[in-house]
Length: 295
Image (tube, rainbow, N blue to C red):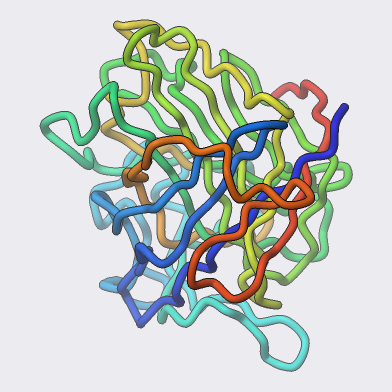
């Protein structure tokens, strides 16, 4: 495998219930002689829990499936020294050791995305010290069978608590672990291919919100094939699904949006890193290996 570098502009923080993804953040996916720089828009879809009261269940706000009556709103967990990074008043908390599943209310009645878009889906995630604590977010169409998904991401609730991505019909774990009592922003970026939807590629990004810092790209060197077709792809998304949500894990700020793509340029690659104008600093990231994992 070849070592890749990426450079990012850090997303601005949250302000209470507002998920603020600004155009000042950019991501680069670098190859040997070219790079695509992503300049994201604010979310087109945002699902948070700020309107809920402490211990109010998700089922009371329109969520369905077996876990909706058991997952409830709680204050975002803090780590040592009271550090959190998530300034929201409420987050969804899985509570017991049960492996809960919950479906969000429909998020869009009409398509929010097109085949020419590069789409991101993201969420804040937190787990406790128990190895059985973790969560996953799946993107889906409400009309599909309960086992069919357009993509997903999360933290495995067993073993080494690896970050994981769902694509082409299966979960694939990285070799990067989520530390306990830290808030992470996990983002699945899908570069749709309008000319050939079956060649649409995905990338998994992670940012440690509690400790600060930039985004780390956890993906194969060429991106992973999402396994899409004209009749089954991320432009048809309308529902979030919480899965493997267990043992006091927390989730917040489920979001979906579009990343504007300028014309690709092979210039300004220095030492494998793209220097972004106006940034004044660069952050080199690297990709990690993958291994296939069952749900």
